[in-house]
Length: 75
Image 1 (cartoon, one colour):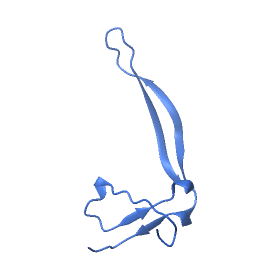
Image 2: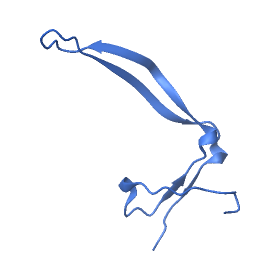
Image 3: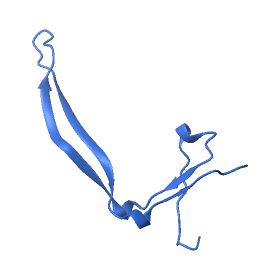
Image 4: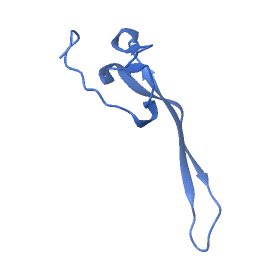
């Protein structure tokens, strides 16, 4: 429990050795699709037709005050 309510801490393997903590509230984040879903045909192999589905998306923060960054931490 913190001054801001209950928080879940999830360490990420890419942040090992980092001195920065990032936090965000998923209630104030959304997925923004930049170009929608696209379908492209791939090379044919035998009798099978292959296709790939592409999508460009990003995480959109809908409220700046709902997220935080703590920098320059030391052990």
